[in-house]
Amino acid sequence: MLATAALAMSLFSPAVHPQTKAAATIIEHVRVIDGTGKPPLEDATVVIAGGKIISVDRQKAASAPKHVQVIDATGKTLIPGIINAHGHLALIEGAKNSATAYTEENVLAELRVYESYGVTTMLSLGVNRDLIYPIRAKQQAGELDGATVFVADRGIGVANGAPPLPAATDQIYRPATADEARQDVDAAASRQTNYIKIWVDPLGGTKPKMQPAIYEVVIDEAHRHHIPVAAHVYALTDAKALVNAGVDVLAHSVRDTTVDQQLIDAMKQHGTFYLPTFTVDESFFVFADHPDFATNPFLDHAANPAIQAMLGSDEYRKSVEENPSTAQHRKDFANDQANLKLLHDADVKIGFGTDSGAMPTRIPGYAEHRELQLMVAAGLTPVEAIHSATQVNAQLLHIADKTGTIESGKQADLVLISGNPAANIEDTRKIARIWHNGRSVKPAVPAK
Ligand SMILES: [Zn+2]
Image 1: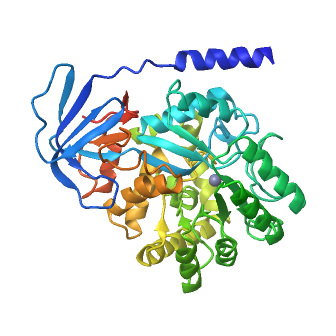
Image 2 (image 1 turned 180 degrees about the vertical axis):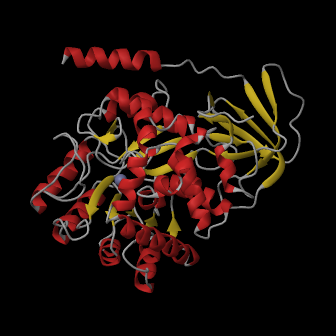
Image 3 (image 1 turned 45 degrees about the horizontal axis):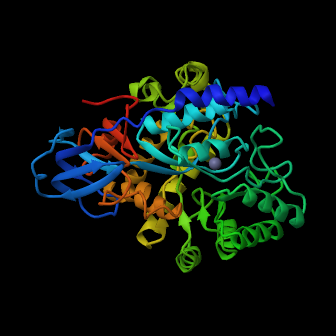
């Protein structure tokens, strides 16, 4: 016990950074993609001070008082800090999943990686240990840096089924009965979890699937506590049943087939959010298809050396080519793309998530920028993809009154891009500056 407390102190203490802020920062001549889905505002002036956005307008700011930092952002674009609504923390050690990886040290390191890639908020969607709660509390008190973390507690899976991850005994629930499931939700609620996560997927028919009697009780009990529920899902029939049972978020694409009008109608009736998580399916083969991706400098600070070495190796490429599941992953990915376009065109609420951190090839920080590109490849405009990753996700997390858009009064959660992502979504990788709650954060791979 003592050793744990001492470790916590030693980890927390150096992390407390003084909030070194100029009295105000004025960003001039900047293109603003404000997160609402509106077209970009050209040649704007954005003023931030005291951790907040003070103003956004077309005029030059009135004469700058002392202690004001003025940034000439000609040719640059300001977007809201990215919000990832489906990530995981500290599940990887080296290039493998590990049941012992979930430590304070690893959680903090990954939150800092996210932040340094412009992901200023993330929802750790299950497989968390209780040590996440003091970290969340210290962040709320302004005593810790890193991406602002929201949590879905341990999550509720299936005995001998999903999720097929190595985990510590205090990291996931696998209830045998509806009563047990209700108790698990109550325990998570007592820790003030932000979300409840469930896994409804027979993993290709190889494993038992969570029964409706369990997930219906979980959803009802969570809602009794006013806690929303997100579901890992694969098949259209399960997606429909979950939406009709009141689930708040489908946390992956429907991948087995094309979505239909019944699902669309149910999602619109219930206001259900949909997270495509293209990165999940693409990550099974993309680094084998594009070996150059493994040597891209943008990956360097996100992937650890063991993962980089694995992705760059011939053995890895061969193992992907020879894996009988790879063809299925490619099919799933094609379904993901077609389904996003159909749901988006039907005005279903499209959020943004990556499942980064769940497996070694889903790389926090890197994956979020790739996901934006893949949403655009599937048929969204860049401004729409950014809207999903900012304002829509702020709504999903019930923080849209505080962040997710570039509007006066909102938190200064901002990413300054060297380029124009409205014209070329890949430009989001060219990160010149990051502010999180007004605090300046060094980009992992700074652009000029
Ligand atoms: Zn996940």
